[in-house]
Image 1 (cartoon, rainbow, N blue to C red):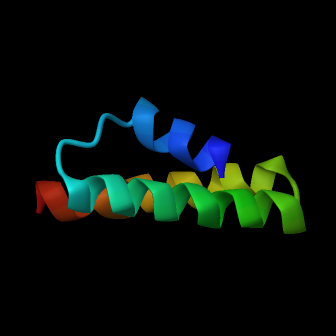
Image 2: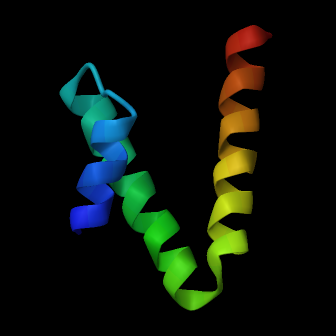
Length: 58
């Protein structure tokens, strides 16, 4: 739970909705890290960022 809050703080959420999204994403990435390895959560984070940036740019 603490790492999820830190994940959200590092991403500077501007609204309550963004805060909830980042905390949820942090918990999900933490669960992936717990179940697999660091590369799995890093890869998922990369895919998430690519999806978000592609939606913002197009």
